[in-house]
Structures are given as structure tokens and as C-alpha cells.
Length: 177
Image (cartoon, rainbow, N blue to C red):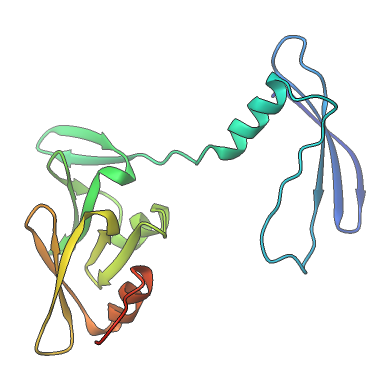
């Protein structure tokens, strides 16, 4: 999209005319309405016909923002996506990413990486670990009220008491304890 024209601004309504970048693309009117009463965002596409342009708009709305991470192993830099991460952890203030391809040193702090991860798929285990929920295999209760988490890889991490309830909520924990 190569041109954005603001056509009007009224209280909580914004109107834009967006000209499509594709050759022969027609201008698309985009109406954004801010309604504080809404609980969820909603998108309405109006058209006189179901065509390729409507399909493209739907596909763009379905796209998730692609996030990539870069980790270091020796002199090499490796690129991976969130779904490749098994868990992140810190050792001597150095953040490490355990992935399906290996273990890599990260330049970012743990909280910075956590902010970039999809919250529905990742959970904080402790001050020094964040886990991919899809990679968890089982839990084991510890004597001090914490949990021991086992990953599909056989690795384990401990969930500190502070984060036990959060992980239980994320996995919809049922039953005792």
C-alpha cells in the first residue's frame, strides 16, 4: 500500500481512504470506530461481491505478526521462531534458549523475550525460566509447594510457588492441588 490519505476525523471515528498497491487496485475505505463498550475487537468487510480482493483482505487479517529470534552458538548466529523454543532460562545472568535445534545464547533479557512471545503459548515458570506450553510433558509436586515441570525432551525446570497459579490457569488445571 503506497498512499494513505486521511479524509476526516470526528470525535471517536476515523475515516481513511487507502489506495491498493496492486496495479488496478481500487481504493478501499477503512472505517475505524473506537467504542469503549466493546469487549472484543470486531472487523466487518463490506463488498458488493466476494472476489479476490475480499480474499486478500481476509488473509491479511488472519496473518499473525511473524516474530523471529536470533541466538548465538559459538561464532554462528541461528534464526528461529517462537514455536521452535522449548524454554528460555538464565544462567549467571545470561539468557539461553533451548530449542528443537540446540541451545543458544540470547542477547535480550528474559523479560524482553517473554514480551515478544505469544502469551497463550508461553508461561513464566520462575524468575529465571519461561516455557512453551506445547513442550510440557508432565508435572511433579515438590515438597515445598512448587512444581517440577518435565519437558518432552526430558529436561526439567522448577515452577516457583509465585507462578504455580498462573501455570494452572493457563493449562486449565482441574482437580486437587
